[in-house]
Image 1: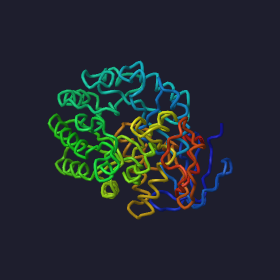
Image 2: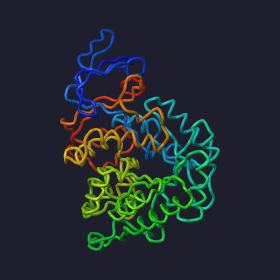
Image 3: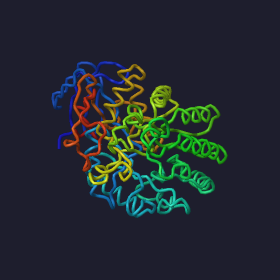
Length: 422
């Protein structure tokens, strides 16, 4: 398999025009007018070269729900979207709460061989929020797990959350919290507000998210541990995180592409494609999230790629599953909402979608500045080209994309993993 290329006429994240040579899985040279006769030449004029994207929040469903997604199909979706590393959430069946399960997922990723698949371990046994999982065993396994999350469920018991934060300190781990006070969201279907009242759907109040963020940043400060907040959706949540960072608390946060673009007004269609956990919020929240991402208060973009089979989405809203696909459209959504609006430049995109998530996850071979000698994990995007999203053409095994039919800017032309074009 060829892994020697000369990328001609591209632009680095800092705006510098440059050619880039890839040989034997490494970046061999960077500079203008490179001429290496032995390499396959790829013309990338007008394109931007980014370090390979890293997703800290992916649902691959395997083991247990292979009808929705597999590690292989999810890896295909990842590289199609420009990702060279993805993090497999623990809400599989069986739950990834033991060394055996995370090692299974890790090996499946290696067998697929399209990108790196890093398992995330559950915080509690069975995601039940009561007893801590085998975090030490998972950390010491071949998967070397460093990120732990009960995503899909909140670790709502403050004592359990405190113990988890304390436990991961011994191996430099981080707890990624799904911030949702369950007693405030029983039966909730969408954002609580004017639209939910008009539609007669039970509302999901912003305070359910914000109260857990506030509690957990204080717990993290108390035990001097690392906390990561998954899929922030509210303006109030942003302000709590801003306060915590100003106070010196070791907290990071993520936002999804769909929460940067879509609003709760879309629920008026009663189309469950727009039903997601946490829910789509208001235009005010969307604007606050964009500003926070640009400023760095929100550290990263994470897809929360959540595939579901048709029968669980093509039904009544109240019965439908929560979740949306995200891997194949993420970079385009960021191009539209953050780059084309002037809120972020390509260096910031490289940071929020590659460098920072790799740092948080401890993925040392990913998320590096593009430099000679580095591993050739690269994403090449044409920022001026457009494409139309077609759910029937996605690489995922599921079809639940809310962007079907939309024309989006930013075409991922090439993804290189370990120097091989995927």
